[in-house]
Length: 283
Picture 1 (cartoon, helix red, strand yellow):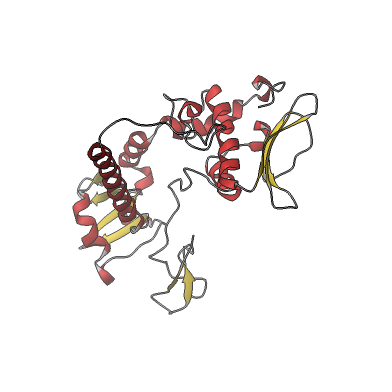
Picture 2 (picture 1 turned 30 degrees about the vertical axis):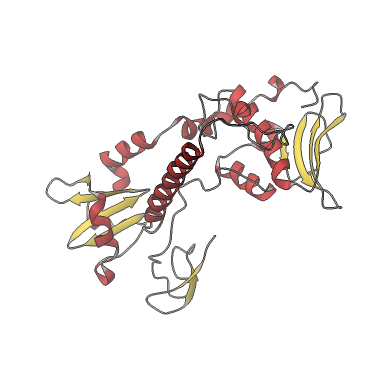
């Protein structure tokens, strides 16, 4: 979610989502290009809509209707009715409707439709969650039809505490890593007469001698970014600076190293055939 900040040149209040100041047109150094997928575990209808949009899912062709009481046959959906209940449904091939869930527990309702969405994707070799080796339905947690049951895990209290400590430590390290990257907007920087480019969590510098871009140790990035007036940010490119980062071998290498099964799968929805779904069952 965008926050407000001050334009360094005219002092106007602007949003961090503004690439340039609407008042004077100056570049906004706090602008962040949203290249990361934010929603990974949707818990509301709106978050599920964001999740699908971020991954370019053609929901109408997939026959999933998020936030809509769709009436026609062959459809999965979730919506809020006029009483405030969240309804998860499946319209079968014969036009009849099977209600999967109806109630106030939005998180459970979203988890039901989200699980079905991933199941349908996985059945077609598409993995928006990046879990190509483990079926999602086999790993669902307390929000299942038997969510009131509990499995007793044998082991000492110290062993459980140690496991929780490791998990918490991992989460903290990951959060710090992501926050550090988020504090550095993608774009071009000049510091100490050297041009840098930041993308994702990677930094590159431009070598004037070889007219090419090379990776740089992230240990220098705080110095670059905290250089005050000695740096500037711009996602555009001036030909007088040399070769654009996006035309370089470094960018091609970056794309190859950051590609994954989940990223590649986003282009696979073009071949989606809803005819392979079992429309006769209740779910």
